Length: 137
Image 1 (cartoon, rainbow, N blue to C red):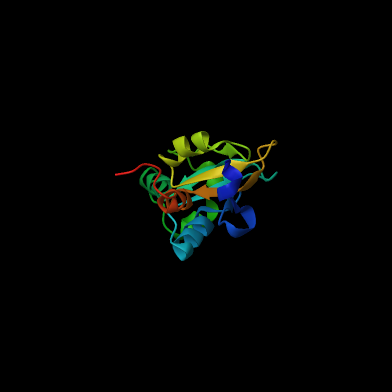
Image 2: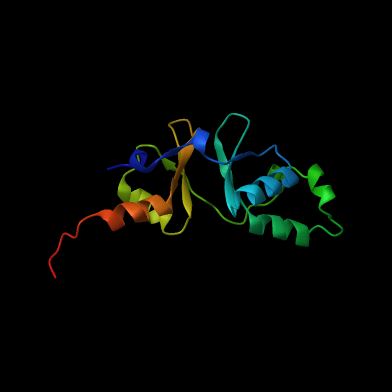
């Protein structure tokens, strides 16, 4: 089994452009109640994952920054403290599981590193929870 089995396609995923503003990202994350979202560049390639913590550190390290000022800060100007590694669409379960242990979701890319969706840890856990036991008690 490979990662494609669990793929949530890009058109069903909340993601942001690295050219979006900090305010746009904050409002979108608040609306969807997400703590992190994948980022794409102008070519549709996966560019990283921005988190609430990244925004907090930006606020802390930018004296005088107010919420209205966040309209002038592009996401690409914000240091990302967490590296959310992507997998290739053909990645096997072992590769997916090793990343899903540390990440709530795993970005999925094609041969050109174009972002095509995510695999959430939740679906992986649900899949394995539904498997019949293979050993006797």
